[in-house]
Length: 190
Image (spheres, rainbow, N blue to C red):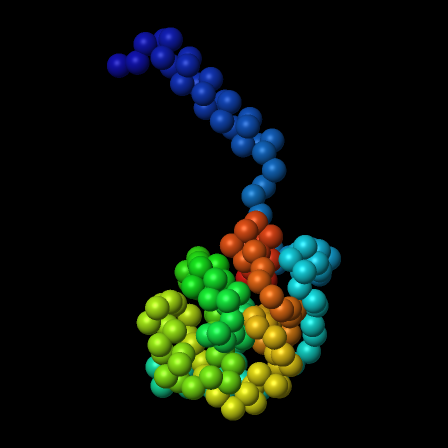
């Protein structure tokens, strides 16, 4: 049985909870970034904005599976053009790009690592020393590399959930830093 003092404390706690809840602003779900926010995030990461439909992409992975952009609708896509001889790629792909993939793949980010004009055995040898989880696609003849105007390594292209171009750039980025994560979260709408 509760005594008078315990009942008074309990009633005060209930009243305090009701008052605080009534004055607290409603919690709204996270919305996608506004165009102004997205533009700012792209600039902060030195990503050039891009618009429109991307060139077609249909390549086989090192695992033999065929990949196409149509199968990735509804996901944010990071195309990462790289080469085994590129020291920047060797530093960034198995570290920052891998970490980004692991962090956001279950939230809707798809990363495709596109090997630029290299034979499958060269890529396979490199991957034994530097294993990564994103699919590695082979562009041995360079047709997709040319279509995306990837003239340097690494080159990256970002696509939104609707399959539209968002931005592109060349060289390394701090993908796992605050700015990189903020950009990916904004594109994912979370």
